[in-house]
Length: 146
Image (tube, rainbow, N blue to C red):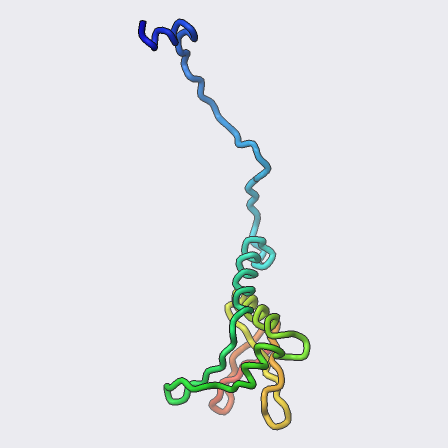
């Protein structure tokens, strides 16, 4: 007696397979909604931007000047200021984090340079999202914030 015949005697003939639909058991549901224009309200976008900003805030800052196409050492005091205390309200890590976040959201970042009486940089402030336009005056390009 063959092995197949033994199974047939024990279990009977194989009946036709019944097919149907299935549904996965779990708590995940796809939800689609309308885009309201605010990227940062989306959790996936926010987590990607947060990761990029976190890694950028750990960067070592270097100030580089280009003079006549050649790269020269920049201002060491400015490097230290950006790295440790760019303004009186935030440290260097927060400053770089905010700049990278604004760059990813708006594709452009503006930084206000605060200068002392003799023209040295005394503070750097990331500017919030604002309306702006390019204005030319006396052959020079300026940006006017509204």
